Length: 244
Ligand SMILES: *[C@@H]1O[C@H](CO)[C@@H](O)[C@H](O)[C@H]1NC(C)=O
Ligand SMILES: *[C@@H]1O[C@H](CO)[C@@H](O)[C@H](O)[C@H]1NC(C)=O
Image (cartoon, rainbow, N blue to C red; front, top):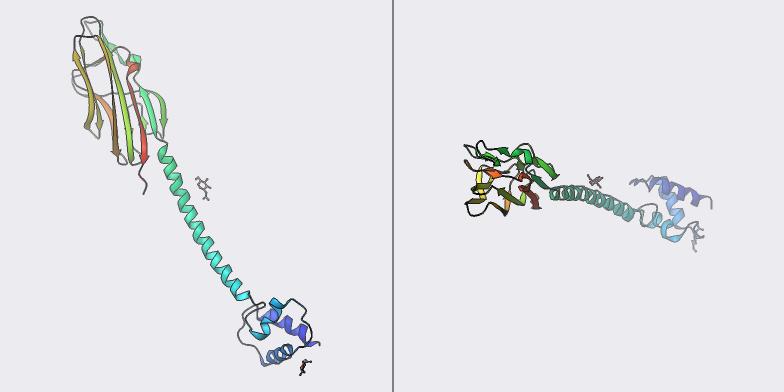
């Protein structure tokens, strides 16, 4: 009668720890326990296993260890996946926050000597046009002092610009503004006539940008934009970023 609790105790001490070899004393105790005719002091599912199958404190112990181990591995794997998914989502959502809008400002127009026209230009070389008044610059890709947009994230982008020029009676509208990507012209708008005194035009372009690609607007040599500088607008935004 006194043997069983000891066996249960020894069982839980040794078998839980997965001790393979049992002493002969333990074998004797075990035999006694196996032959025990009375009722067991704990529920069936755990108490007879150590004696008949010798796998652990309870029938399910090994399975539970296994489940525990596999669950742990899976949780670890899933956690790593979550972390890397999180960083993909972060870079994707950061990549979408790229847009700018900038305009020229009135004091960029100066009086052309001998005329009443106030213009930006003409210059004797092509010049990049600065758009210093910035009302939007998400992602800080646009540099207002240079008028240059730099793609920090590769992807597909859309750019638009509107040029406006107004000259006096008998004056000549004479401008050509071109959108440059890495020093090469992509699209342009131009005007060369004496039939009307003011005109505006808009261009929109969609293009791929690699990281570091630069876009800006250029006024062609010898040409001018006159009056209402603030009607000249340069905008851009990402359509979708490329993700690695
Ligand atoms: C249990 O019962 C069997 C037969 O019914 C008997 O041979 C055995 O000695 C009993 N064991 C104990 C520990 O009383
Ligand atoms: C996911 O990224 C955000 C932004 O960096 C961070 O605040 C958050 O803690 C991250 N979550 C996990 C589970 O890493």
